[in-house]
Amino acid sequence: MGSDGGPVTAEFFRRLCRGAVNAHHHACRVTAIDGIAEDAFLAYVLSRRPLAGAYVAATTDQDGTHVVRIRLYDADGLMLQEDTGLAAIRRMIAEDRVPIPVSDSARGTIEHLAPTAAEVAE
Image 1 (cartoon, rainbow, N blue to C red):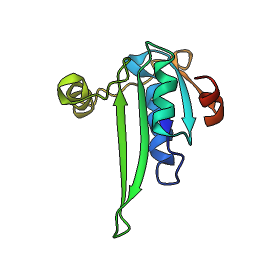
Image 2 (cartoon, rainbow, N blue to C red; image 1 turned 120 degrees about the vertical axis):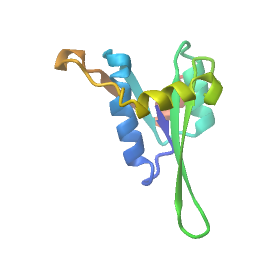
Image 3 (cartoon, rainbow, N blue to C red; image 1 turned 30 degrees about the horizontal axis):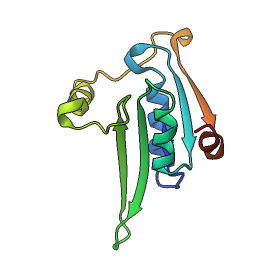
């Protein structure tokens, strides 16, 4: 998981990480990199194939409205589209099939990395 590190994206990023640790009800290890540029984040993800990723960023419109963008990437670094996996994720959310841990022992973990650590690892 990656984020632009802004205050608007902080809660979205935290929740996305917490949900990802239980993907398909498995205890997953999530690497969280807050405050990294999207291109550097994608380079990091691609260097660790097969690894999917999600990136959260926000912009502010002229009227002060914040727009949060969440992009999901497959293991090849391609952004998910409606016909390449995004529709299936939307359907799972609509059907309330969100991942939850089956027990505390099945709960995943979140490893936080500094943006510089991810950039150095490229």
